[in-house]
Image 1 (cartoon, helix red, strand yellow):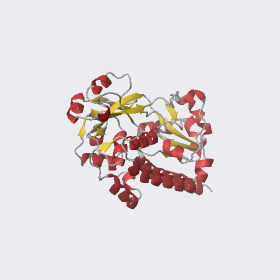
Image 2: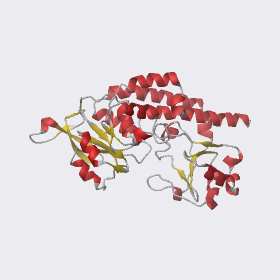
Image 3: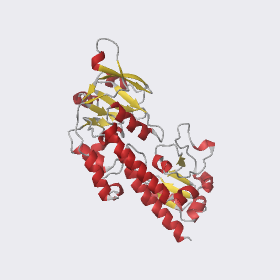
Image 4: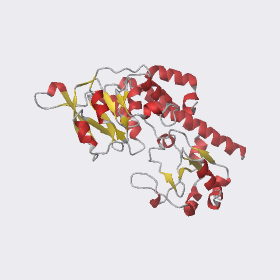
Length: 339
């Protein structure tokens, strides 16, 4: 059983009772959208996206999501998309997507529209969407597939390249779909749990400089606090190791270095190993003298990071809070044992 599914079962059951009653419903677009000009004004709205204005139907019954995270944000609102990427059908262990979302999709009438990296245009046509939801990383603005999808339905594109994308996408969808009342309880629960955990583990979060470390077979990189793998850890108030200017790209992704440069991590008090590190990669680190001499390694403060660091929605974030509370508890226990 995944850690996400097993943590705090009573609270989880109450949360699921709220979001797994999802069924596709008719909902009007919110007042923030302006009527389109012309004869079709009564039937359309204009959504002002950061990637450009999009003309939408005034009422939306059918939504297709072509990215990995947005279906979770919709389910949080009680809205089941009619088409989602295939990961929601194949991830039966909760390794990438929390089980509450994949199980909800599989129990619904939603259909697969291919994987985010290989969309099935015919399946999107069959889904007959009123609108298609995308993020600019899974369906870039210059992707030729966009023009074909736009022949089927308008595309709303959200940002996904920063650590705040999960939150802004969730609140934007709630406003767009007139579902703010459905989202607010999740926001309140998230903020309450976040503040509780931040206070409980304040000493570790403030006093230990952390890095999320990603080893590859022949190189390594670290993730910036602005990256979308670290948003909930950052929201808890974690102190991140100061990275050198050449260690991250402009959009917060890691630059990669040879193992000869592992000494850069001397200023990390605490190392979290990115999810998915293989036994072979761990063995390579164990055999590396530079790694073994790092302060965090010497002090036994190297831990596996949470499974689902990238966050898709408020419900997803609540699960990540549970997992981070568990992880910070392990760190605190180690620190206490060292006296």
